[in-house]
Length: 178
Image (cartoon, rainbow, N blue to C red; front, side, top):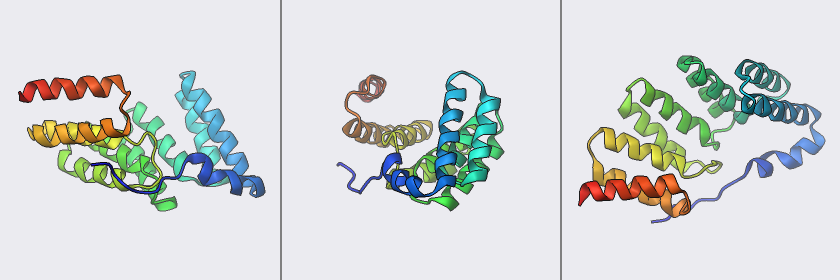
């Protein structure tokens, strides 16, 4: 069963407004710099740039990615707080819901994580769309609910059929169940 909902990309969300809102344009430029710092392994610099981006114009994206940087430093409470702030800014952005679920999984809060992944699946703006399905499958595997896990992996494959890791996970679980 394919999920039906409208989606909105990052570009769709910000492109038009950024042309007329100089603070948003600066915030987006800082986010781009932060991403490059992250790619270069400079998490501290990325954190500072995301904070600066938020100071110019808070976006759900900057809060979420700041949280991700905190999680890389095992600062999970701060990461979760940034995700909650992201949701306040834009409840349609799915990434912070998924990320909260991942952070909760790290601290073995499996039942709470499940609810966050379900919320992520319903979010109109989410990339990569298949992640919450994969993560929900992890929850179900941890609970020993292999049939439900297989269903979530199947749904993820419908969204991202070429994802080799996902194909392998699905095949491995299917073999386990047979």
